[in-house]
Amino acid sequence: MESPTCPPDFRCPISMELMRDPVTISTGVTYERENIEKWFFTYKRTTCPTTMQQVVSLDATPNHTLKRLILAWLSSSSHHPPASAPQLPSPERHQEMLSLLKTIESSPFKVTALKKLKAMIGTDDETKSFFIGSKGVEIVVQILTQILSDGSDFSSFRAGEEALGVIHLLSLSSSDQQYKDIFDIISKAEPVKSLVAMLQRGSAEARLHSVIIIHKMLKRHKYHKIPLQDHPWTDLDLFKSMLELASDEILTKASSRALDALIEILSFSKGSRVRAIEVGAVCILIELLPESNRARSEKILVLLKLLSEGANGRSALVEHGLGIAVVSKKLLHVSAAATKLGVKILWQVCISHPTEQALEEMLAYGVVKKLAALLHMDGWSSTKDRVVRMFKLHGNTWKRYPCFPRELKDYLGVS
Image (cartoon, rainbow, N blue to C red; front, side, top):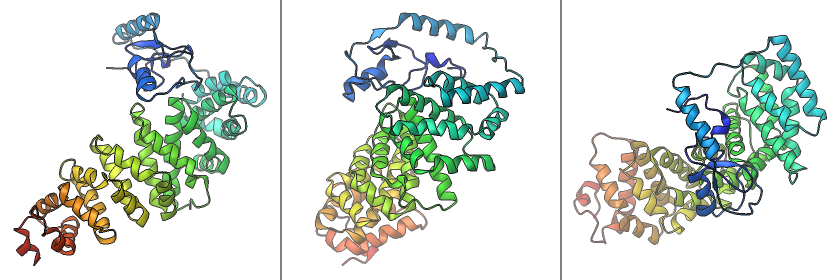
C-alpha cells in the first residue's frame, strides 16, 4: 500500500499517485508513462502538463534513477517509517514566516519562498492561524491575481500556482471568523477569475486545487444564500473550463469535483443553467454518461435533470439523438437514485417536450418497457406516480406500436 508520506517527487504530476514506470519528456519533467502517453496520444496534447510549455518531441525517456529511488523507498518505508521533520519553536517559525511573506511581496523570485511557506503552513493549525493573522492570505491572493495581467510570463504563472497551493492548505470548511474572512477575500471578482484561469491553463495539481477551492466556495455561497448573478461564477469561461475538466479521464479526482461544483452552480438559478446550455453542457454530459460508473452517472443525471427543467435544456436533450437512449440505459441498471433521476428527466420531456420524435425514441430505446417494469415494483412512490402519469399522457400514442405492453391497457385505463 502506498504510504501517505510518499515524497512529492515520487508522485506523477498528472495523477498525483506514486509512479511505477517514470519517464521524462523533453521539458525535463517526469511522469508515469501511462498518464503522459494518454495525454499525448489520446488527448492529442502537445504541451507539458506541468509547465504548459510546447514540447519539442513526444518521446519519453525512462527515468531509471528515479525508479530505483522509488523502489528503494518502497522497500525501506514498510520497515522504517520516515520520521517527522523537526519543527522550530513557535517564535522562530513566526519570524521565519514573516520573513518569507516579506520576500514574497518584494522579491521577483517568489516560487521558492512560496514553497517554503506552503511547507510551514502544512504543519499545524497554530501556524495557519498566525499566517492568516499576518495578512498572509491577502499577500498570496495578490500573487494569484497577478496571472491575469502577467499570464504569458511563465515565472508569474508558476508563482500563482504555488500561491494557489497555499490557499488550498487552509481549512476552508471551518466556521471560524478567520476563515470566513478568507472566503470574503477569495470570492471577489479578480481571485475568482484567477481560479478560472488556473482551470484553463494550470498544471494538473493546480487544476485540482482550483476546482476544490471553487467547490467549497460555492457550497458556502449556497449555505449563506449569497446570490451569484452578475459575478464571475456565472461567466461562460467558468462553465467551459468546468465541463472540460469534468470530461478529463486522467484527472479523475478533479473531474469528480468539477461535476460537484457544476451541481452547486446550476442549483442556484435558471440563469446559470442557460449559460451552461450555451456552452454545450447537455451535449457534453450526454456523451460522458454511457461509460460512467455509478457515482459519476448519478452526478451527471443530477445535472441533466437540472438542465432539463428549462425549455432549452429539454430541447437539447431530445435533439441530440442519443439523449433519451443514454438516459434509458441507466434506468434499472445503476442504482435506485439513478433510476429516480432518469424518470424525472423523462417526465420533463413527456410533459413539456413530447414531440413525435421523442415519444418514438422512448419506445425504440426501451424506455417504455423499463417504465412498465417500474409499475410492477412493490409499494408506491413519487417515481411510480410519474410513470403512471406518463403512460396516461402518452399511452394512446405508444399503444399504436407493436412493442407497447398490451397488459398495461386495463391497468392504466388506456383505451
